[in-house]
Amino acid sequence: LPAIVAMWHGQHFMMPFARPKEWTDCRVMISRSADGDVNAIAAAHLGLGLIRASGGRNAHQIKKRHGVRGFLQAMTALEEGAVVALTADIPKGPARVAGEGIVQLASRSGRPVIPVAFATSRRFNLNSWDKATVNLPFGRSAAVSGEPIYVDRTLSDEDFEAARQRIENGLNAVTERAYAIVDGHAG
Image (cartoon, rainbow, N blue to C red; front, top):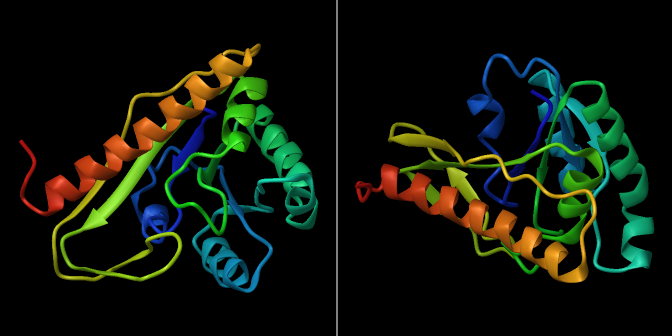
């Protein structure tokens, strides 16, 4: 059961409502930012555990965003049998490009990455770096999960990039599928 549930930034607002009942211990990684504070309050009220950190593209960003602490807390959560949910793309973009942290977490923990997406037929798309979507009521909705993606514990640079690309492709596939379902284009 312990797994890493991955989604894209801006597509995560409704995910707490789509989580399976058996995920009783689900901990979400949320940034230490003003936006993150709002998300953390909502997540805690919905019964989710919190890991307050986010990734970065360089050592300065990772330190500023408490990335190492978040990584260690995620590893501990997985060892304790929890599901860890996080966005795979790094804050401030580029959007929908999987970062290295999720690959490292999957590799070091031995836990699979499960790509997930949630979409609604009635929505408002924001003009933001993360292509955020505000889901609106009274329409069709779809929660889609992909096949688990396992990452080897020892990776060459080529293997690392291939694993990162598999996660990115898996997330793009479930996102495309969720929107196809709610927009009536699913076959």
